[in-house]
Length: 412
Image (cartoon, rainbow, N blue to C red; front, side, top):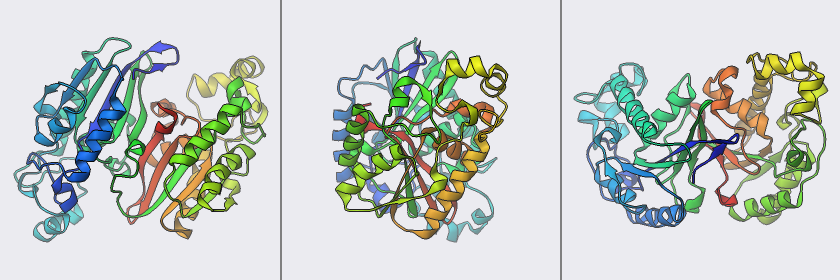
């Protein structure tokens, strides 16, 4: 499962959250205490075994707690390392959130998981961050180029590592990943990239999500322009035969939706229609879900843009200055804000799960803005693959990232 990033042989680390436990079902918090896997957790382990079968693994490590070791053994024989344990909750271990609020009312005035927060008798959060960051670095250092490590660990550990890698301004904007989900991090000469976050699609719906309106932002299927590596924003470009196959593959695995909305671009509408026909829904058009406006760069390849506008290309893509694309187009931040407003309107106007069919650049700009990732650091998130989805859950705490660039229906 190693990933070749930009032609460079990359090191790949897949972070796996343990399968569902009895305590997860009961809603009690688990830190260093342990709990056996539930019946659903056992099924998740079987699906994980099938998902990882045949993928080359150079290194397998896991937390030394029982729930992670049981999950990891489905993949193979690995090393148990205590540094990959969950956050030590101290006196809170085994309690429900309501019990914690009743017994420790001051928690409402202190954001859990920030600064020097420390539950009674537990771990200081700043120490936890150092511990898991060091554990991640130690695994990375053991890999050579083109090697792949799997780490079976805990939800809070994955959430914290992802938050640190992307430089999220507020870690609470990233949800704890699902049980038995996969998060893929790629390291190469240019730095680090969170390639996939919280891939639980392969579990075929066998997961529990937090409450709130779910927006599934789906990039359109492959187009002629994608195949030719041309930048199309507002222009039209048809789906390829491969794109139509991608859309059908997506339609077969997409869970039930309560509504479907699309960018006005035909490539997004055609992808949405493949899903809508299977689910008996209509496709609503939202103009603000459109891709970047590339201005004078529209329809050109990178080489053509470099040749025709060397100054503009250098300013944006080499110096990291967020200026309008093609002189007359949109900025990264402006595009992200536009998508954010459209997403907020859709979340406010509906409930349940809403399919939002849009574009790769627009999706990345929106998610980067939500997480507080500066434009110059945007490459820490890839542009989503064709028909990949990013899920946003909007609830009382505002929009939070639930998954990113998930496309396991494509076999990757």
